[in-house]
Image (tube, rainbow, N blue to C red):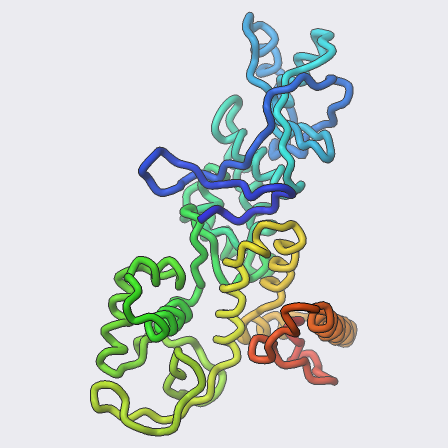
Length: 380
C-alpha cells in the first residue's frame, strides 16, 4: 500500500530494495529540465541560519557539473539546492538544471527536509528538531518512525517531541507507518475490526485480515482463537477506556444480540455499542479509502476530521486549560463550528444523487445546543 501524502496529482510512494518492505517516502519528480535562474524564488528551507558562505565557496571551486536542484512547480520555490542556485547566479549562468515537484507546500517542506538530511551540507540538530516539529503539525497522521526517517532523528526523539507538543499537534485516530499501513492508535479497535472480518469470512487468511485491520497476523490468530472459545476479541487489560460504567465490549460483528448461548457454551448479555469505538473505526476506514487518500480535497477532509475527533479525556483536558476570560468566546466559536459541521453533513447527504445519503450509523450525534466550556463539542 502506498504512503498517504498530499501530492496534487499522484500519491508519493514508499520505495525500497526489491523484495523488501517499502521503507522510504519517495515523491515523484519530473525529468531534468533547464529553468531560468531569475524565475526561481528562495526556499522554504529548514536551515534557520540560511546559506553557509563556506559551502558556497566550496561549490564554486568545483570543476564539475552539480546535481539538479528540486523546485516546487506551483510556487517556483527551491525545495533543494539553494547553495547551487546561489553559485549559478554568482557565475552568471542563465539557467540551471532542475526537477519539478508537483505536490503541496506542506509536502514540499518535507521533501526539503528529507533531501537536506541525506546529502550536501548536513542540517544541524536544532534544524532537524524544528523540522520534525513542523512535520508533526502538518502530517500528524504519520507515525513517529516515519517522521524520524524523514527528519534524520531517532524515533525516541520524535516520540518525545510529539508528547511535549501534544497541546498543539492534531490528534489522529490512526497512524501511517513507514511501510504505508494505517494502524489505529488503540489496538483494541484493530482487534474489533479483525473480529468483524473473521466473522464475515472465516476462511480468510491471517495475512489478509491483518492487512485490512491494521494489526499483526499474530494478533489476528489470537482474536480467532478467542472468538472460537466464545471470548471477547479484546483482552481485559486492553479494552478502550470508557466514560461510563464498566461493561463487556460489544460484539464486533454488529449490534448486541439477545442473551443466549455463545460458542463454547458460554452466555453473553446484550451490550450497547460504544459511539467512540464506532467513530474511530469509521475514521480508520476512511483513511484507508483510496477515493479520499488520492485526491487533495479528500486528504484535506481527512486532516480536518482527524483534528476534530478528540478522545473525551483530551477534550476535557483541553476545556480545562482554557483561560476563564476566553471561555465564553471559545464556547461560542465551538458551537458555531458544530453548526457548520452539521450543515456540512446535510450538504454531503443531499449531494449523493447515485449512492444515496450517508448511513446514519456512520454519522456521529449532533452537538447539543448550549454546550458550555466543559462540553466543547468535537466538531465532527
